Structures are given as C-alpha cells and as structure tokens.
Image (cartoon, rainbow, N blue to C red; front, side):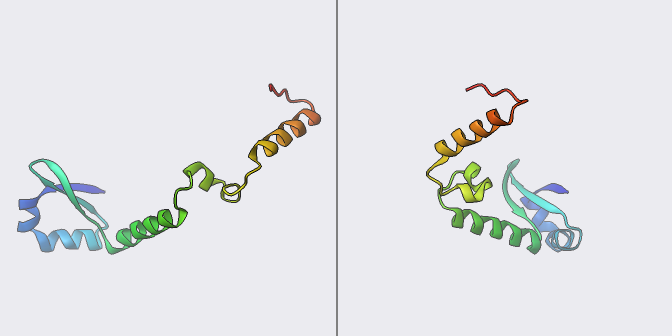
Length: 99
C-alpha cells in the first residue's frame, strides 16, 4: 500500500516511517508542496527495480513487442514467416483468412 507524506512529516517521523517501509511492506511517496518528489521503498522493492532497469539496459533498443517474442527479435524473414502462416491456415480449412 502506498501512503503520501509531506517532507515535514517524514522528517518528524523518520524512524517510524522507515519501520513501516521495512517491516510493514508499505511504500511511501514524499510530497513537497503537494507534489511527489521521492519515494521510500523496502530494499526488496529497490532490488526488483534495479533488476528491471538492468534487464531494460540489456535489451537495448529492441522494441518491447519484439522482446515479448524473444526468438523472433533477430529474425529478418518475418514477412516470409507471415506468408507461410497464412498459407498453413488456408490449407487447414474451416477458418477463413482475408489476405
């Protein structure tokens, strides 16, 4: 659960806030003048975020849809593959394919 606290509240209750984040598995958004400026999360959440960042860096500039299909990301014959899939569907019958 995410809670919102002002910077003044965080300063006044820092020890309590850390305990809630650490043991209560709470996430805290720190507000300055009513705007979110920072977040306090557990070390487990931080590690998950860092792992996601590392995975994004490793993926480079690959489009997210291509990442979802993994092995297809480096294929250069996708047009031929699509044509083959449509031909197989048409040959199977019972299913209309508009080309």
